[in-house]
Amino acid sequence: MASIRELQPGKIIARVRIKGRPEVSKVFPDARKAAAWAAAQEHSLRAGDFRDTRAAHRLLVRDLIDEYTGAIASRLRSADTTALRLARFRRDLGAYTLETLTRARIAEWRDTRLAEGAAAATVTRELGILSSVITYARKDLGVEVENAAGLVRRPPATRGRDRRLEGDEEQRLLEALGDHAGDVQGAKRAGAYRVGSRNAWMRPLVQFAIETAMRQGELLALRWEHVDLKAQTAYLPDTKNGESRTVPLSSRAVAVLEALPRSADGRVFPLTAQAVKLAWGRACRRAGIEGLHFHDLRHEATSRLAEKLNLLELAAVTGHKDLRMLKRYYHPRAEDLAKKLG
Image (cartoon, rainbow, N blue to C red):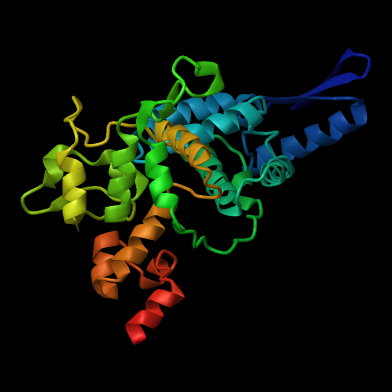
């Protein structure tokens, strides 16, 4: 049965109680709207197609993100990157309940991110993570809610990146990643106290990335127990495409590893994704390099390897299962191809 009661002027509460069903209630500004809602709810309850949305009405997005982080995100291979993206959602949308996290609200967030300069591919990945969070609420927590993030239109894909190291950028980048005293001792505030990066792992990480075409996540997960310097190989048991692979190491890559100290946790490069991001940005600024991403080193390495390997061999090294995907990373210079033609 339904009951309608005035709490105070302009605040009418409607309650619907049906035996064997959860009680539902909602506040309205006038009795007419309250009565219409109560009639619809009572009909749904009696017909058996009632959706209990009370949990969605109470559950805050920030609380759901915290739950998802502990249960799912912390166990992902991309845990560090995912945590950063979840933190953004927690900050921007955390105060909303799942019920009020509508398609319009998420579309507004999407447009704001794009206006801030975020790449379309980045926003698409972020929306995918938010969709996973809501799916977790639906499937694991039993929350009756529409997955608005999965229904919002994705921004149109942009042209794939083909950025490579140009001119003396590699030399300038590696120099910026070194660590040495400035020309003027003691002038810390003037920027001459130290020149370069104090992070001893970044320079060899970049050098190794250029030699191997490994993804950043693969580099940071690489362990000494999976490196065979004698055979010149590095075994990757868990990669982005879900399959293991063994990466051949050039003599330069081996030399980089031989010069490294052994970290206590067994990783070859004991860094977090956030530490790499910050150190990379500082190094590029010091080197005067614009528009270069760490992932572009994979483009660079793949293009260099393409000069020595055929396409199938190249795919075995880089881990691409689809040769069409490999083409996105294979960007030989026209002048280099011309030399091959003779």
